[in-house]
Image (cartoon, rainbow, N blue to C red; front, side, top):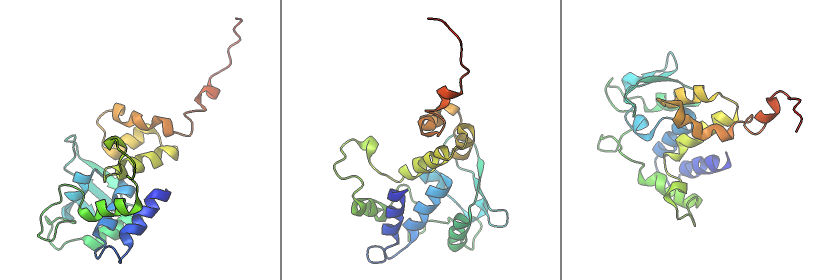
Length: 184
């Protein structure tokens, strides 16, 4: 949580960033678990502020899904809602879709020194890390893995299993087994 707050604070700093776009994208990712591409391709027609729902139409696995909006998510979507039904919520200055995290995000990660002394790319903080953080927070709060997988749009439970060790019951699950009176 501390690292997420540090990143958001950095992205909110007007001294370093003139636009709050990447702060808003980071907050959305941390609160929805959307894949970067899903977030970058959101259009007005995918947002229902009335019902507080995001419709994910262009999912990696080909399935669509719905995401419930928390108030902060609804507020950010409202702020970026374009006039045209088919227009992107978040886009480059020229109107084109993002295909990867922009330099402001990478700069914030660098300012926060998250990747300092990390050589293995698997452990570096990238925009996709925010999705993993969302999933980790859910599991640590005791949300069932099946529900987490549905929210993330995982097609199978195998993908969601990587978060199982974060469950508060994971280490205590042996205590839930009945005692067997076995003589050894």
